[in-house]
Figure (tube, rainbow, N blue to C red):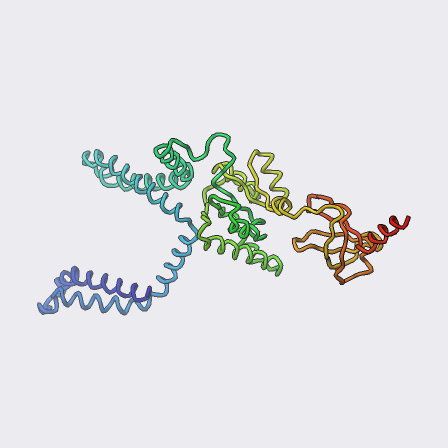
Length: 369
C-alpha cells in the first residue's frame, strides 16, 4: 500500500512539473513544433520520467517513512497532541507579531524575520506544552470538576492519587496485572520512558535469564494496555539528570502528585524518605496471605533439608516456607503437620510445624499420665 502511494505521489508531482514548466523550457530550443511544446505533452513526459525514477528512490523513501513511524510510535498520544497544540499557538503568536513587521517594508525585517519568529515560537510552544502537559491537564480537570460539582480532583488530605507510577521490578514481577484485574487498583498507570528503555535493555541482554525477565516485562506491559478497564499512559517528560531510574521515578511521582508502585525494598525506602507514597506489591501479598494459628493442621510436601538437623522444608501454594521438625525423614512425601508458630520477616513469612503423629504421641502420653 505504501509503495503504491509513493509511486502515485511521484507521478502526480512529475506530471504537475511537466505541465507547468515543460512549455517554458521548449521556448529555449529553436524550431520546436508547437504540438511538442504543449502542456499535455509535458504532463505525460513528466509523469513518465518520475514513474521510472520512483523505482530508484522508493526503497530509501520507505526506510525514511519507517524510521519516522518508529519515532512517533515511541511517543505517547498526549505528548503529540499537547506538542501540536503548543506549536499551533506559537505560530499564531508569530503571525500576530509579523503583521506590524510586514508594514515596515524592510527586506530583512519584513520577509526574513517573520520566518525566524515562526520557527522560534513554534519550538517554544511545543516544548512548553509537552513539558507542562500534566500541569495543564490537571488545571483543566480541576476547572471542570469545580464547574460540575464544586469538587477538585483530589481534596487536601485525600489519600487517593490518580497516577500510579510503575517501576521495572513491578512490571517484570507480573502480579500487578492480576491485582489490577481483580479491581484492587484504580486510576492511571504511568510508564516512564526510562522504565521502558530499561526493560528493552534487559530484554536485549546477552544473559538468557535477564533476557527472559525483560521479555516477560514487555509482555506484561502489552497485557496491561489491552485491558479495557485499565488506563495506561506513557510519560516521556524531561526529568532531572540521574543515572538511577529509581530517582527519576521518585521525581516523576512528585511532579504528577502520584504514587510509586514497586516491590523493590530499596526504592520503597528512598521514596518514603522523600515523602512520596508507595504501594508495595510484596507487602500486599503478605497482607492477603491466610493467617495460620498454632495448632492448625495442614498437608504439605517436604522438598528439601532444613538448616538444622532432621529439619525438612516445604512450601505452600503462595510460596510461604514451612519448616517441619523431623521432616528430613519424609523427603518428597506429602505429610500432615501441625503448626507450632509463625514468623514474619522482610522476605516474607515462615511457618514452623511438627509432624502430626508426634503431636498425637505427646497428647496420648499426657492422657495416659
